[in-house]
Length: 370
Length: 147
Image 1: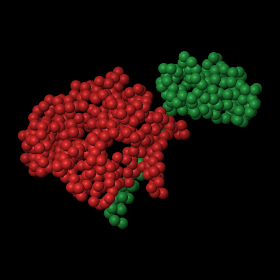
Image 2 (image 1 turned 120 degrees about the horizontal axis):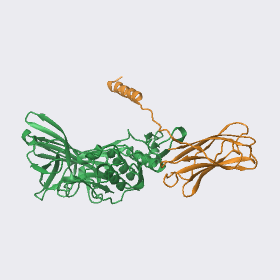
Image 3 (image 1 turned 90 degrees about the horizontal axis):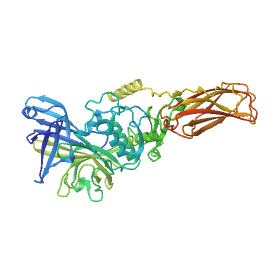
Image 4 (image 1 turned 60 degrees about the vertical axis):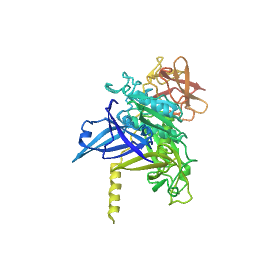
């Protein structure tokens, strides 16, 4: 099995520039989790990098066993850092979903743009996005001049499937990316996994889209990632309770005893230890409806669950090739040698490929579903 | 003490020093204006106060200080908060029946029929007072807070 990787380079507007196959090294991570952004780092010759600038796009395209190349999970990175050294230039790009970090919900608290009654989380996310960076912008109501705010010429916002859990959200003047991540977390806490990404459509256009239930395919009954099955190497499972919370208290608008308060508890996790009650306060003083506050508490509790993370090098076999049999966002079964007999059901939250001197190392990061 | 312990202590100290106070956002006071020419103390049933609802809001507290004598379980005032537009909606009531007579007393309404008030549908809030039995004149100083 052979994999070829080349990088398609485009201007910030999406206009194709060149294809790079002669990079020295590269290392890229594609993250499906809603609260993190993947990074690509490419080491090029100075001449190859000479024409690159901020927000130039690089896209990884892979070809497996000579098959037509495809854009790896639709990943697009926007270049944000350049390091020059003798004989080489390293460029670093951030996954395009980081564009959401460039906007805030710039509407007044209490307005229909900032405070949204309960609706499907993915619909809420796409509506917030449209109203901050696309055709949904209402310039008369949004803070300040809207110069270059509308990215409709380069970015499409996909229609909402409306599959997420019903979530209310009040988010005036908060960061769009954090709000999007919290909507996903609140939906997942309510029973329906939701995440989002900005991907390329293959023609130079970016698309913001959401994924419900799983970004990839549910392969838990057909695929086992395990060291003793030869599909995983150097596996390491980390279960970390350090930043856990089992009680989330969300405080909204109001003073003293009149402050709106909503709480969320995980009594199952709490009962694991007599010291299992760990409280966290979520300060949402712009939120004045109990429904939105309750969803904030739920999202905070979900975000503060103990992390169960499995990392390892993917050992690709004839029946386990990334891009064909397994990929980003898939739900799989996993086992590690250190925990014999225990099967974990996990989601592939990130895939990483590292190319050094022509040698490829694919690895995966898996997180527990709950 | 190991270096790691020292580092942890320094970090913990830094967190305590850096601990931000959790801020509270003040409530908004809706001005209750005299209505129908009625002035405290009130001798008869009426609607003596009203306030504009100029934006959608969440009612938080109708705070009052009242004075009434005589006042007891059979002779008291009922104070009802309404919102109104095309029609009126009672939001809740409190009475003076359990309050001691002949002294100023605090009284509050903190639960409301509608959790959210729409300014478009209900642009006004008003207070209605009504006697049961034969209480004394009602001295009433109200304040209406919303979020």
